[in-house]
Image (tube, rainbow, N blue to C red):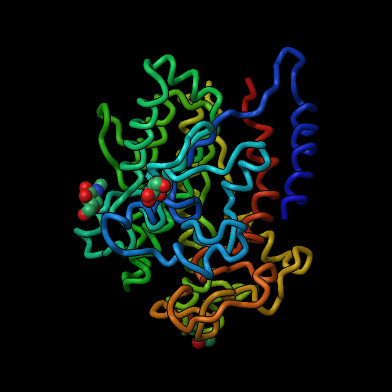
Length: 377
Ligand SMILES: *[C@@H]1O[C@H](CO)[C@@H](O)[C@H](O)[C@H]1NC(C)=O
Ligand SMILES: *[C@@H]1O[C@H](CO)[C@@H](O)[C@H](O)[C@H]1NC(C)=O
Ligand SMILES: *[C@@H]1O[C@H](CO)[C@@H](O)[C@H](O)[C@H]1NC(C)=O
């Protein structure tokens, strides 16, 4: 695992050297900050659950079974995309912000498993319950600001720090869809929940909620921002299980749900249109869209080349029941739920999240997109 990643580093730097003007001095980022959900949480939900008393499944085996340190709260058998990005940049793995014993010398992780983009109360008023956390993207932004107050004294100093930081805002918004879907809301209704269409009024201009957060991150001084989109949720065991039963016209050539993938694509298209507007408004910043959707499709369609078992592409490694080895009432980590013998042959870890192997390949696909466009000062 490590050897495959370390060989990326020289490739990265050679890619970077090619298009660079001679007057630009190159050095790697010194900090990484991450806002997001379970695709990026490295332990925050465990820390938060110390106050709520509900220990998340990811605190226990088989979560973390392929990671030297064991379970950490990462929703996978091992490392996540943000970990592989840190390794590629020769930075330490990001500690969860809520861990009072952790150090944050090279950044911090604010992502919480189960977080939504829209506020907790937006969903409770719709009758949608968040089974994991009441933390949303806005709360994470407030943590980010509090953290900055501990490491820089003036706005100018904070801008100096953030000029050397790679800031991931997302993936977030997946749970705004997943929770209502699992809880029986119609796809038609879920289209009205997307954080890119819910608008707020600031300075008399209507902008989407998600964009307000990204703008605030830029106002704090971030100039290297990565905004990932949603994955093809119609290819995940959880999505397929929720919509199961349709006739063959409901599925694409890979067996993924067309209407759920369409929902993710609409979400991603809104996001990309909004990012184009942000790029016009903030030309000094590099705002990169990380196409998780296409990267996921790439490993799905090239499964054999990536070493995945072609008969298990839509099945959870850790899970039980049904066509997709997933049962919402008996999730990975529950008593008696088996784990596949070789997670490196599976894309899906627990029906919702991916295996370390899938995350590693997705990162390798995305790194050339994420890094060359980014300004090295
Ligand atoms: C921090 O460290 C102390 C002493 O080692 C330990 O008792 C405590 O549980 C730790 N807290 C967290 C959040 O890990
Ligand atoms: C989340 O819930 C905890 C415990 O009930 C509470 O202390 C905290 O203020 C809540 N946070 C938010 C952002 O709602
Ligand atoms: C398949 O399902 C769709 C949507 O429910 C329906 O419109 C269509 O007529 C069905 N086709 C067949 C062959 O049953």
